[in-house]
Length: 282
Ligand code: FES
Image 1: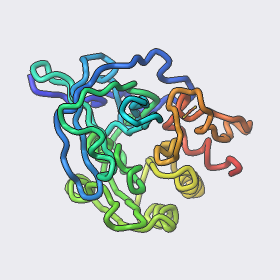
Image 2: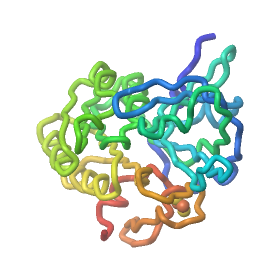
Image 3: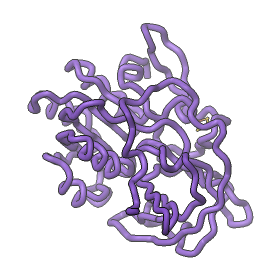
């Protein structure tokens, strides 16, 4: 039986709003492969089989707990870049680190992990044109997301931004999957998304990853044009995140049904309806 990419059987759009990972346990993984990809390293880890990995979606993440004995006191949060479930070769999880951190997860290393955590991106119930937008390392889940959207029959348009062209992630593979790819810079991210929505016909859903401000601006651009959006409202580039609901660093203000409230993105997200964040005060 061939390996099946996890997340391929999602029935519909993400149902937001419930805590997603209270039962996740620490597991023992082993780094099996490290592959350089421009300014990043793609790291594959063998993990114990678990139905949670088969249900895992783009937009979920793992926590590498801090280990004082290794000189790594703080936890590190990493987007899941892909999951492969194979009855012969086992379950493999891909994550992406900045190349400067790549030595941390070198091949053969045994590594404790917590995950998969959070709520990921859902897929449209029917094939529709979609616009997928990501900034720098925030784009880690996008290759997997685009592959699933293509399997669903969606026409995919991409906007990728980076402040330094070297920090674009896997543009080549994404070009092969998407109908169009627009590259831009971080301060023009939401403007470019808005421009593409004006140019493209029938985009049904906008998906976005990036900083909190960037995804909020993209969500506002989508809302202003009457388009639904789903955004990853957790920026893993922010320092000192726990990923488990303890630190409060990921809290953000959202507006749900006209009511403003605070939301803990690592527990109730990270993927949220864009309308929830588009109207929230900064
Ligand atoms: S990242 Fe610590 S509470 Fe969410």
